[in-house]
View 1 (cartoon, rainbow, N blue to C red):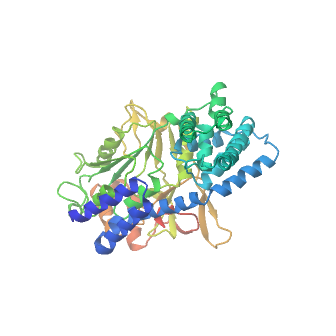
View 2: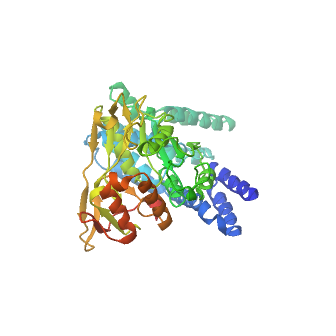
View 3: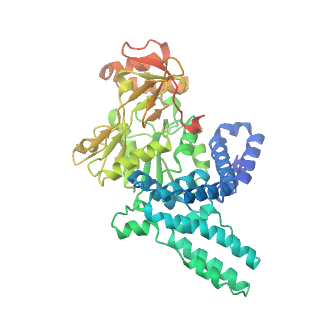
Amino acid sequence: MSANVNAIKKANDEFKNGNFISALKLYKEIELKNPEFKDILKANILITERKIEASVDVINSDEKILKLMKGMLERRPSNKILSNELLRKYIELVDDVKSDRISLKSAKLALECLEYSPFQVSLLCAVYNIFKSLDLLSLIYGFQLKPSLTIGGLIKLAVDNDYWSAYKNIISKEIASKSLDCKHAFELINRRPPTLKENLRLNNKFFDSSAIKISFGSILLNEQKFIGANLCQHYDFCDEWILVEGACKEYPERKVTVDGLSLDKTKLIIDLFPDPKSKITYIQYGWTNVDGEHAKSELRNEYISRAKGQYLVVVDADEFYEVDDLKTGISDLELDFNKFAIVFPQVHFWKDMKSFITGEYYDISHTRFYKNLPGMKYIRNHNFPELNGKFVHEMGQFKYPRKIIEDKNIKESYYFDGPKCYHMGFAKDFEDMRDKTDYYLARGEATTRISTTSSRAAWFDGDLPDKCRLRSWAGKTPSFLK
């Protein structure tokens, strides 16, 4: 066992160093020799394959991006106003680019933003001309003046002063090493118009998104079915992720260790997940000290007490979001000082991802996006943190309406229009559903939440309450659940 764990750690090191093909090969070799590791390595293999696919897109993107730039320059300059939403995406993109190479999709977004901003037309021209001029200079002087530089790198040169300075030093050393007179090259690389960030800062309009810090908080127990996919789906979006594993008092003892921890492969999947940016804090809390409604609050307070971000997103192991929806939730909190919480409608998948349920309990959407206020804590309800005796969501909350739309192409099939949370809590295995149901019954919900209890019972006997309805799902599903 230890040899296999060491082999996986070696593969993780390859992943962290960006050697995705080598990492995938190692993961596959381990899986082939040890079939019992198939579930454990599922998340590792999936995220590595996605990284390889993305890198192929990057490799083939340079000429396409160059054509896009040329097309923009041939058109009349745009007089459109750069919207706050587009600006936010652009600044995010600039802050997220950590290397020379970016994908075609990201480059298109950057170019779109440059085109929208009137004072950035000259910058777009400069980036294009630098690329072509360096090509020409390379031919004249007989050596490469673009060490590992791509269109993605050029876009970064246009928006990142530090990167620009570092690149100039590389070019200068390269020219000096050849003992050539490259005055024209020096003039070229020293000439650059003001960037979007510089212009906005001068006009006191710049919103510093680099200060944004997003914390994720999760509680989990026996979640091997979804935890790997959840980490893959959301890892890139957060700055830190605090995972708290533990069992509430009254939870069926047959399904947890004596310490109140998972009996399945949850821990192994988390431990072996390649955490290249060291975002994950994994806390094995165990049994709660209290029972009933307050037990989950005890677990949730473990992540909320550690969260350092300006914003807190609660992402339980069986809850999934599309990245654009996550951005929407955070953007809503950023741009409105009067909003302290955001609520998305939940798609409650029923047994699988082919159908979903609505009505009674399933019409309730939990608040998952918060401004992370100092001293915030779960006290009276494990779904609603509070501060100074007041629920945070009561201080100012926006709730997106649930818009269920019938698909015109698929009869009696539906999708949700707008941001949403995909909830897989009712798409678990039979034993997991049985254990969770038994826990809620032991907690006394057969008398305190009669309609909720009857709707949960319907998962086993098919006898849905009168107000509940099952419908076929025609919408998208989170990419890592496919």
